[in-house]
Length: 175
Image (cartoon, rainbow, N blue to C red; front, side, top):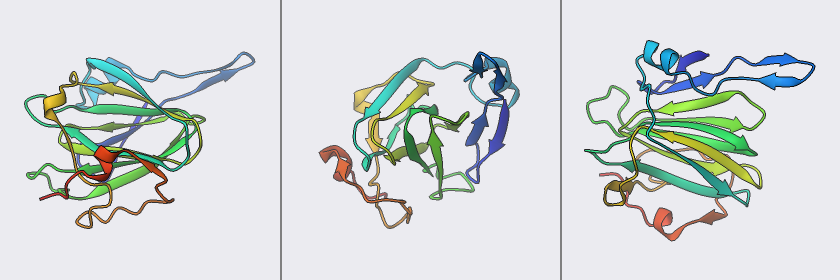
């Protein structure tokens, strides 16, 4: 696995090495030893899949507050998405900056998003699915977020938002 730190401190693009032969291909999606060697969490407590039927679906920008703040390992397993993270850690040198990457099912890339960052994505194809691994269990009372188009972040989205939940549409601006 190759770990490339993004411009946001502590967030990484994780690229798996693919082995290809006459049968097809194989790559590891996670290795506790390699994550630990890069100073990243080596245990994930919960996994989930987000299925999105329509191109232009936006989910985000979500995070979970302390004491159950969560890190996430995110991979696209079907279709293509524009995946975005925002650094909300006040003590961070990259506070209020954002980073985005296109993830697709044909690639061997994932992103690790550390606790204290908001995360979201916009589907670029119909039938896009995202596989999440989280370092903490979900606690609904601690679930939070910031508005996807908050001008204080200035995120550049590559396509129109066609589908968004009422909750995500009405998330507050960052203060």
